[in-house]
Length: 133
Image (tube, rainbow, N blue to C red):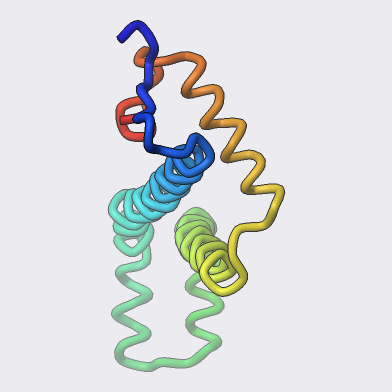
């Protein structure tokens, strides 16, 4: 048991690699959604709080001009909300592309290289227990 991973005799090494690549891809998807959730829990509340007077005005008299000027005069809040929305849309498009068309070959190769690096480093790698066990 000196090796960081054990392959069962009946298990095909390519099948094991495929499972590990799928685990790493699943962790990547989860990590991206956790990052998006973190953004919405940290940056978005601050942005919405700094727009609270404008939001009250929008609720009374909603016009697109009021929205445009409210966002224009609060550039940090606008950038924060745009970043949250942009990251959410980017992850949605990325995951939708992967679901509909499958992973591109370039992404598969990158994931395989990462799995090989994780295997090479062994149990000292932070992802080893989630990928190789």
